[in-house]
Image (cartoon, rainbow, N blue to C red; front, top):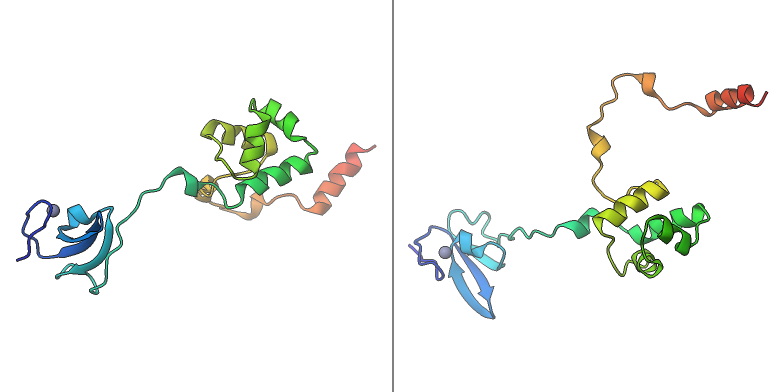
Length: 154
Ligand SMILES: [Zn+2]
């Protein structure tokens, strides 16, 4: 039975990893988070390298092109960067950098931007859990809105 070259544990499945430029055969636990080039043994799946799960939070949660989403919404509202920056209590230069995607907005800034511009900057859709149970909650049609407008305009 092969042994892990890091912890010495005898294992059925060994993972070939590259550590500081050197190849090593290690157990599954020690292979986690490293560059696995190969895997041998009964648990090695189809015999191909198993990819370690990398954990990269925050960045991926933002929608693609968040800078443009912010900029377009801001321009649609006719707000200069300076004014929006003031509203969300942020520096004009920081906001400019966020729009250029040179920097990520902090959670606080992101929430303020979302509120101020009425946009969503995260990929996660919390509304997904909402179930539509009947057709009663349909949004008003243009016709409905037109009728409403008529009444209002009298
Ligand atoms: Zn080990």
